[in-house]
View 1 (tube, rainbow, N blue to C red):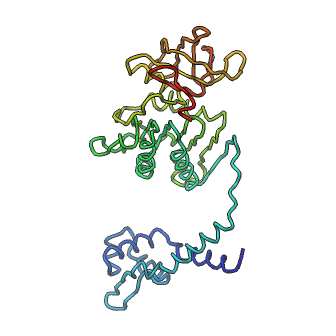
View 2: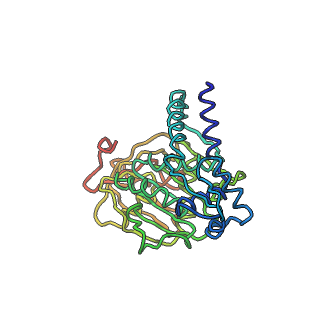
View 3: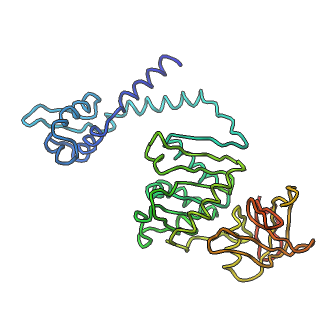
Length: 353
């Protein structure tokens, strides 16, 4: 690392090393332009004896000016003047770090643990942005607001989204929040023990406790990147979380047919809710041999339990009738890994690639 780069990093670190009291005081002064120490204490939760040390710390960083008078006045420095130099240093730092950055090779199949709140949030954003056709999420209300624009963009791109908001007591009121903008179907579930999770297209997922999002270093998140174990997250979501949640909205934008699915439960629900014939093209594995198979045919019947623990399709194919289940199926003939449903005949897979 060059001396200039080290100096820049140290400069930025020193300037932004603000504690909770310093942040509160700075925002209060910014909002009002000028305050006395007593006024800061009245407008914040900073104890009166700590106000003077706090504002002197802000003054040392060039964020406020202290005007000696009776009483002393704390005056905000214009952010452009106070932080302009740091902004330029930060821009220079990012440019130099980008020049040194070598992107790590992402393994084709990986399971990893993360203990950083910022890393968990980054992966959630990456999973949302990376979904091609199907997304399931369990988010706190704060995370819902944080990723609202990303979810809306996914909906606009034709991604189906099952959204679970937890805890239900803090979920935005459907009368005041447009769930249709960010989801196909939205539900709310009680309990702060409900985990935060996201699954894109059935094979890229993250699972984390709510405590991990509060920067609890003893908690963690698990990333499944195209791992065969990733189905555990979506299966847990469908059978444990989703089935015990209350509906908030079912008015979200639905994709046109043909539709692609990672979850057989969603595919079965669509067949049961909509009238008319359905045709399916399904890739998966033969239950007995484990061989990769492609089965295509007309959907004859469906099986679906209210608990959502059982969901299957029966297809009339050229080779006879076949029963198709979800991942780790054992009672059916085929384990479905990807399902495409069409209305006017067997869907052509190439048109959805």
